[in-house]
Length: 384
Ligand SMILES: [Zn+2]
Image (cartoon, rainbow, N blue to C red; front, side, top):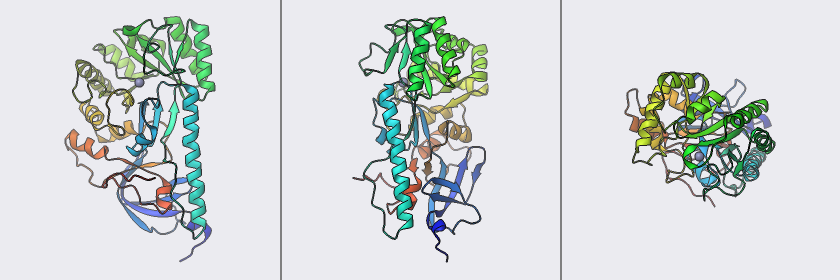
């Protein structure tokens, strides 16, 4: 068998099944792990050298987390390849995103070295982090939510008084590397930005090519966000039952982040019921929902949250739309590995959710290096 440098740089593995956005289900199939990441197998790739028991999917993303309030490494161990931080100090988040990128580069460089030499690579000392996108600071009215909250660290809130300050605040987040702009519209916890200020936030963010995410709370705030052109709601609306015309309009233009489990953490509250009803009609109207939990807010399981998945299935999502919700945004370099026992059609939501919650992040480095592949069927390995 030939052992040229090109072949040694990659490892071909077979897997029981694979799911990809657009392609759907295939398998058994082969993928190639290289120091630069995963790709589908091409004709010139080496023969498979090992078999992965399980199902490979794009890396899962939680579209609503707060990395100042939850451990990023633990989120990665819990099955999340990528996260969107929706409110924190942009300087801290920018540094964390850079750390995550640097750790991936170091891993791929080590993988390339170990693939080229007979010496086995040493285990990595730094624990891997999810890929991070962030909104930066909450933009809010002076004295508005969450400026008075003890959990909001310094730098995580910018109080904007009028359109000019709103534009400047948007620019500061974007210049710090923000992928989104977050605006707080919470009438129960202080003043909210007026219409002119809200329009300025949305207008400037869109000029800079950024999506606007709103925290809406209090009757009428979801409608305000929709009218102002807000692209994404940080929480499925939970303050009031939205009228059909509003749900239909939102389904045409907005993405909603689910965050259903945050209403009671397993003991569903009235707000959970309102949110589930709104989401069920949003899904039926063709709206785009993405998986998000508000990690850092309350006693959520750190990682993929089984209860959030059950709620999404209860809202009318079937398995494929749920997988789309779990893999929102740009695909991370890492993949998700799930046990091979895929629930059959018609399986109860609890069974589907329990399967998905066993997700493990699989990096190309896991297959190229000497360390064992993380298995969804085994307890988490604790590495020094
Ligand atoms: Zn949040």
